[in-house]
Length: 149
Image (tube, rainbow, N blue to C red; front, side, top):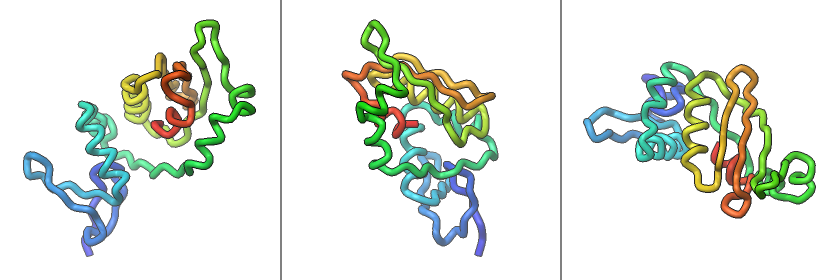
């Protein structure tokens, strides 16, 4: 059995279990799951394909977040404790983002967040994995922002 790397996350798997497709240039693409396949296409459709140049050989770990956990982020108790509502009505939070392995991770997260409707500001400090996000709660809830990250 030959091993191949997932085109998105760079993790190695047996070729037989991979999802296979060809890109517009006829290059063989391998994906370990539908999630990686979807993210790969999303990045390329949004013009963010240069993420893979920045990523190099770094391996990405799959995200593990349940929708139940995400919904808790929109509860009043959580909002009162962790979210600052500014005078202009925008909301602000500081987050620690796990799994930041390289500057490509920072770049990708910032690019995707900046393209998301309702997010006004997003900056991530690579040295401590701390992110500052400012958003309009009338447009997007915190749970959707975290899901996007």
